[in-house]
Image (cartoon, rainbow, N blue to C red; front, side, top):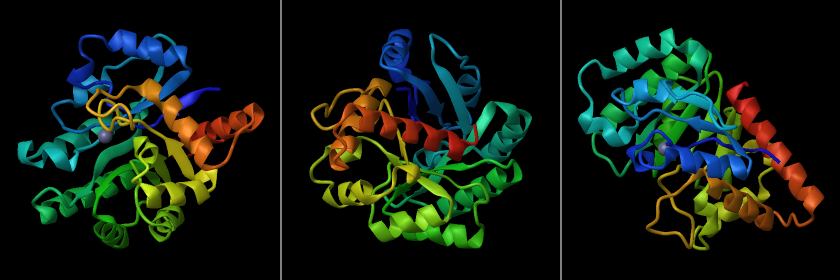
Length: 259
Ligand SMILES: [Zn+2]
């Protein structure tokens, strides 16, 4: 069974002291494929410099995460777009990008998100979308400018109706640590009832620690526990059925990223 962590920030400083060990652990547990999304222009060069190593294949995306809106300098998006165009062959997606209601400047976020959709469409790439209390605003953006190549809704949480809307728009739902928390009952139910072909696994390492690991740095190896929980929620028990689910998740990751 090979696992694909479709969202991990292995380039972040949290891994500066032991990145090789973290990657060796991941490879040991067959977490052999990782998508590393971009968050700022400043970090883009470092991200692009990552080379496949120790049995891990890296895939990359470039984007401006709404969290860092206050740090952006004039022209950052244009610089990012130029970089993305010149490194098109190294990219599998545009993101992470999106809209977050816990952050100010919603108008600016919406504008920036539309720019990301436009860039993804231009480069024939899917999107990695960050959301927080913002499904309505994301749908509004999709109405203004439809993403042509779908993408991944990172750390999906929401209702079945919202989940189905994203699937209709050509998106997969990112399933991560959220489903390990019993308080996420609604999201757990939605994920449990969603066909595997619409799901991909992700950790968001070093963020979003799983239940039981709160306050600790998250690592890609934890994708195995997310997978276990997904199997539990779906009532998948036998080894052969688990294999099949793992294969379907892997295929689903490759299909949305067109690799
Ligand atoms: Zn992220």
